[in-house]
Length: 520
Image (cartoon, rainbow, N blue to C red; front, side, top):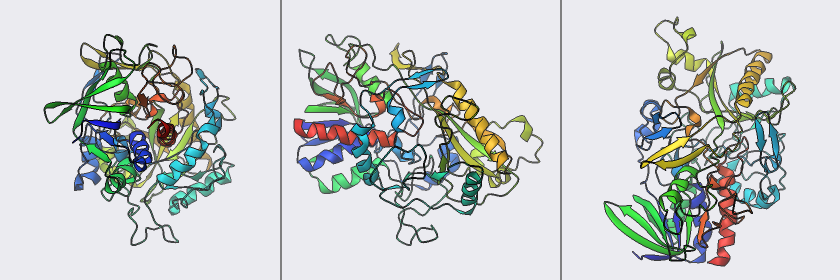
């Protein structure tokens, strides 16, 4: 294998994979370095206990939080990155999200580029990742002249009934935009040749059939099959990046693989390890020219870490819910505020049906103790599952860093009122439609009993901007301090909005790839 390439991409998640597949047709030599291997295809992919309770596919790492407590981060080191277990809800940031937004607890800052700069790449990202949806349903959806590439995933009867009832009280529910390899019959069921079969093992599960539009299935596998100029190395942990004597160019990518130390070089290096791991790589790469970490003259690498304030709520109701594929509906009526709360609240979307083993693994509240023999299967049958997310605000002391050789993730709440009011609105809405519910909050997601907000939807640790004193990257997502270093995961986000970030990661990666075409 060659040691020098035109381009090295570190990380094979949505950002790195999308950029690489966009540049593969140039014929330039491209090396993708992935610290993990392919996620094994096995029956455990669809085992609730293995995935959620035992954390079978989570990274075996221990980090420390601001209180000095240790926890296991919800990270997944596989080809395709965290998209192997994501929920494939692929939203565009709202047009207003690119401007300054006032929240109850502070300001969500404006982006240095507006929605118009990303709009054409959102179109391409939706086509690339097989997004199913319908324009015009979502009242907060930003403008687009291009329809979704695939028809929306149809609601099952109980979800369709919920949609009708929400409309009946004046809300505007819409079909959730999903990246999924699903061919539907007229009634919404999967065709005989559809890769996706509309099963209940979707949110948080690896897809045993490769029916989820993840970075491996959509980008990595097709690219490797058709482009000999692209190589993928798995089990390749990038320990640090070295620079030339000027400190302005990366001249060495140090890799640990199978117990051996290897060095690769490239004209251009793209980091796409995920916002947390990308920042840690730059911090590990400190040198005489970059004493505080590579590309960190601003002191901002690792800072302004954001994740959505999120909650998975199991709404336990009196009627039975037999829905199999439940993740098809969302409503954004309270995204920018409500009649009884002037500040933005966020997004409510459905998530996959809870299985009894998932509910059994929770620390259940006292009101359930009287139930005979804890009938988790009955709780699951009488529940609907909602994913609530509100915007997290950037704060410089919310950061990831090394201390005494260990990873620390400091995190304090920046906008707690929004999620609290969003939960209140959900409970009120369900009561208004005649479906009163007891809300049971799920803390187990992606395998560990830590707050979901710990590492999910990570963003903001290397934000882009025009001022090198306050940002890490320029508007092309190139490091201010290093001429041949780019970052294309959610690290570049100045704010995160309240919609899932993956489509924006993909769109930006395609944008940066077009910039790199000229350079390459």
